[in-house]
Amino acid sequence: PVGMAVSSKNDELFICDENNNRLQVHQASTGAYVRSIQAETPSGVVCLNQNLTEVLYVCSSGEVKVVVFATDGTRLRRFAAAKPHLPF
Image (cartoon, rainbow, N blue to C red):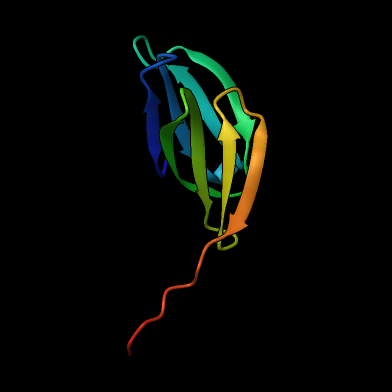
């Protein structure tokens, strides 16, 4: 695992499984496996509440992008992340 986020609303734990191109979803209170969400080389995930609906922002190490999912795994949108400007 390379990152995780917790949904307090749904009692779900989202774990980035980069080597298997997915997010594993577990019940946060028990650790029981629930389902998986396909994601390209996920390297980090954040669960945020937007207008009473939780969404997952998943960054990808394969490309410089962020993919936004509903917590049920529905892909909502994606956008390119800006490459950092390094001063050296």
